[in-house]
Length: 152
Length: 152
Length: 152
Length: 152
Image (cartoon, rainbow over all chains, first blue to last red; front, side, top):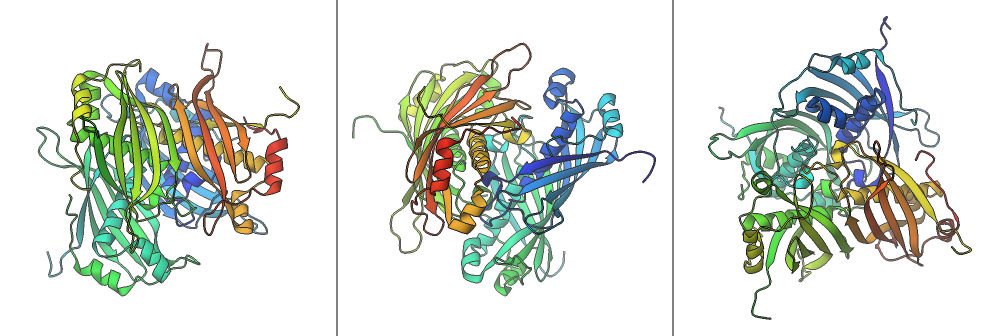
């Protein structure tokens, strides 16, 4: 599209009983968990451990805002592919755009978009929970890398 | 403000270990659970059982969209008050505005707003999950009642 | 039965969508959450805040062992009564016996036992997570009190 | 040991924020989720989809009893290996023995056993939830196969 590649990361998730509710579908709040797993694995693929970030630099990422549309039901045993991109990379926060696609089942040919969200994450110091600058190595990793989950 | 009362419902929630994460605070996704408990108890206070709605009328409410701002951390043992109002009451969907306040601790005098959300809920038939009209008794109950949780 | 009263505590829990799974019933792992809420409220009724215990005395309770029998399904909107007793009160640990009863529905007359568990909880220091003596005030409170949830 | 191989299945799990609590460690109830994911993937590796089992044969597996020892804390970002074996294979139920090992970190050489459980699962018909015979193909698959997660 333009000269710079849009960072993008794909991560696969399987739906287990724990993820479903009595409606027979994935409980909507759990998409926030799926999106977080995908962001965490993206960080890991970039070489960032959140545990080390906390221990060594006294920093952690906290979620400031979430907006999610639930478009179609996902069910037990479904395999979901979470595709994540960065919409805005600020000095102390990042806006992720994340979409959950369900793998095609049987004759159905196209992955179906079941949920999409925009998640705003802020970097804070762990002691006072005040906004802190995203460490430059993480920032530049986000800007330039385009790594996908090898298992997806 | 105007001639018609704004529906409003308050519901108290206690924070347990299950609600927290390694950051020492309530895991953000769990506010969606707190908000749902409050909506459910509002329905119950209006005389609506979701289980009966499903069994007798083949209808259920599904969440279509959630938007939540996380403003301050809540912690283990905190008591949260969820205040819910209706922002828009449509033919097949309702928009709730919900806020979580933390009870004052010690000398702090005012309840603190820790999270606020806007939750869009749709009425669907349980077989095909297609939009269905909100039953008139529920609609009119939402419009006119202003019931609060007796325990809060 | 004997000269000393058996400590006993009752706590009511409502089943929400978040607690259920695609089998249409309460997801079995969630009984551990219900039992923990009941133990926490028992401590609170005895005047013990786990957050203060952590902050002031550097102590916390950790679960060492759980054994649960799932006897009957509980469903959305069910009201469960958790009845908790102490089976054994040791120097550094407590064994709780906890049972979940479902409130009678309709003509059914007796509360139904849906799950029962034995939960062994240990007192540890928060820094090294090593066994620590249960503070005498908590111990004696457990031994002598017989307090019930006023809301149940 | 004897002429017949002991069925055994290994499955890897990563610890995310959603799995932890304010104690800074994995919330103990979540080991039941980890164990269930491992059993589900074992069934899948044997060619059994629980969703199809439900739809096609009107059968599902329900958990009857769980007993878990929590031996050591697991933390954010830890990678756990769940090793599952069958202890007893009955006509209408199976007893699984499952252990969670934490991958060695740094100089520590051996995987550490953090939790172990014994989970009794019963086969039931989906309409009345009464005990039903485990389908022979599943039974014989459990008896003879020794399949491991290719990703672990």
